[in-house]
Length: 178
Image 1 (cartoon, helix red, strand yellow):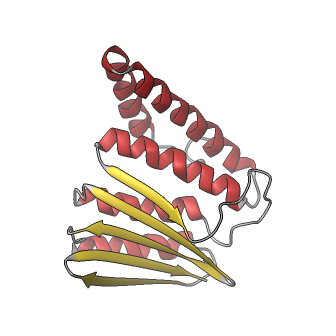
Image 2: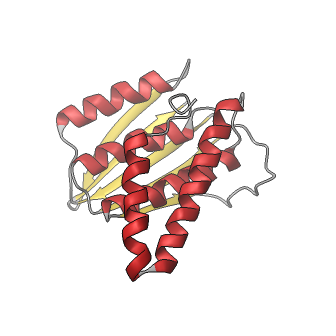
């Protein structure tokens, strides 16, 4: 069940060690991190049972996961959306596995030690766009190839276009999913 839920046991162990170490010096941070862990595990396990996850549940799962990874890696990671966020009761289905897309994009940014990572989600009529900004850190060519292959593998029956731009020293990677 944990494998199908895309739960990384090593990440869980690292985050729990981080929670334990923070309880002595920053109990409020440790408590918040533990709340994110509980939310992430609950949503990830429930995700396996959902035939089609809703946008609201995917976003909540993404936020919890990103908070855990930010604490674990001591990085600044943010998720933005181009419209008002759905309420927890919003039953809008996602066309592609948003959590897995964000997970794969974030993994590549963390591999090159990007200290500030911004993910932007843009919903479109027939798909979505996930943008990854890594600041002045560029993904390696093998990372781009791996990311492209991973995204194509997880978007069942859809199309994925991965674009790369560099403007004034800031690197941006955009996955367009339809």
